[in-house]
Length: 143
Image (cartoon, rainbow, N blue to C red; front, top):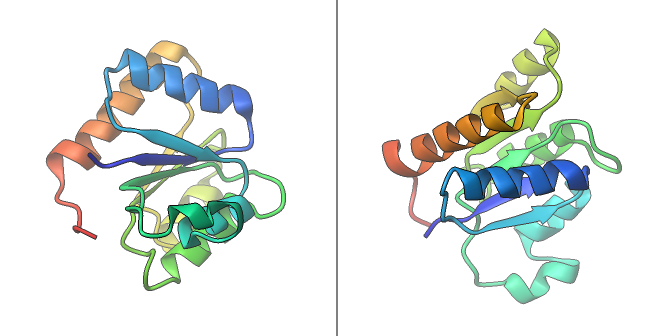
């Protein structure tokens, strides 16, 4: 089964997403990092993530834009600029609704941009829609 990886510095947002996945009956495994630097170590299986070498990459990355150390924009640029990572679908999931963030994200190769829903019910609907699309509708590369 394809796993989901969420990179978000807000522990409340990570918990809400986990609960929304459960509510939406999404069975995919999910793991988390807290900033873009940690995300890149996770994806490259470096540092504290060396023990994951040989394990499959996530099938979907949910990426916040505004984080410390390395923000989502910088991480997105690294992911899409890396031959071994660029195939992983990246969905921006952020509080930003700024047109410039949306445009820039798509210019950088993001696969989808979603502004975080305000209510839990709307988050459940968004999560169900996104996971249905990425895991049941489209064909993802086998890696």
